[in-house]
Image 1 (cartoon, one colour):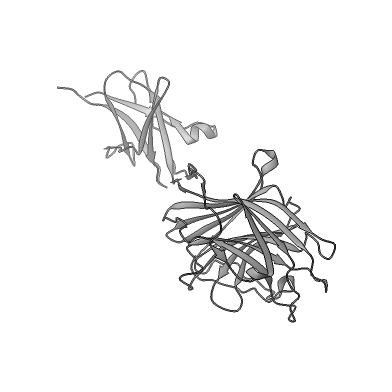
Image 2 (cartoon, rainbow, N blue to C red):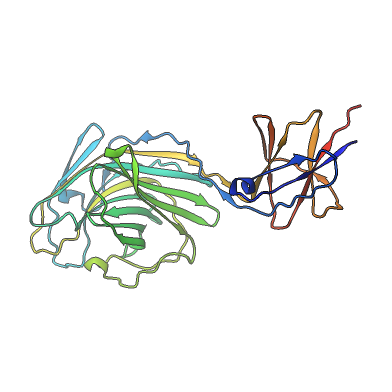
Length: 346
C-alpha cells in the first residue's frame, strides 16, 4: 500500500469552497485542515402550469364585474362605501383547489398584472391588487399567504380564514415599483420548522428583470407583530405567532383603501395564473476536494488529527473537471485532515 498525503486550503474564496488537494512529490505528510462551510442553494427547475379559468367568487365577488378572455381576467366596477369606514372593501376570484405542496419543495404561484386603472375619485396608490394562496373553501380551518401592492407600497401577508381580523403583516414597505406589466410571484417552501414565504416582482417589459425580492420565515413564535390594529384605516389586522399554513387554491383580490367619500371606478386586468413546483436544495457545510487524476485507484480518507484514526470518506457526489477529480463531502465544525490512499490490487 502506498499513501500520498495532501494539502488543502488557499487564500481565495474559490479555494475555500473547492479546496484543492495536491500530491506531494516526495510523499511526505503535508497536512491540510478543512473547517465547516455552509452553502445554501435553491435549485429551481419547475415548469409553469396554467391553472385555467377561476373556479368561483370569493368575498365581495358581486361588487365588481369580471370577464374572461383566454387566460386573462378583467375586473371592473366600483366597490361600495361601507357605513363602517374601517371595514375592508374587497372583491375576489379564486382558482382551485388542487395546488401542489410537498415538504422540502417550493411552490411558486405567478400571475401577470397587466394593467391597473383608477378614475379621478381615487388613486392607484390606494387600490391594491392582492395575490393569495390559502386553504379556502375547504377546509375552513387554516389560512394562507399573500402579496399585496398598490402604486407605492408592497406587503407580504399571512391570511387567516377564522376570526374577525383576517390578516397578519409579515412585512410592509413603501416602495415605488411599477404596478402593471409585471409578474407577481408568491413562493412557499415547506420545511420541518415552518414555511419560508417569498414575494417577488418581475418586469414583463424587461425580460423578467427582478424588481423586488424579499422573504419571511413563518413558524411558531416568529411571526411579525403589528402594533397598530387599524393600519391603513382598516380594522383587519392582527398579530400571530402560530404555525405556518399549507395551501389549496389561489385568489386574486382587489382592495379599495381610498379615503374619499366617493367610490372610484376600478379596472384591473390580470392573466396567466400559474404555478411551478421544484425541490429546494440545501447543501450545508459542503466541501469540494479536488486533486489531479492519479494513476491507479485511490480513495480519500479523513481523520481528526494527523495521527488518525484514518477513515475512508463516503462522498456525497463526485465529478471530473478537466484533469482533476472532484469529491464533495460534508464538513464539520471541527478541523479535519485529508489524504489519498492507493487501493492495492491483487
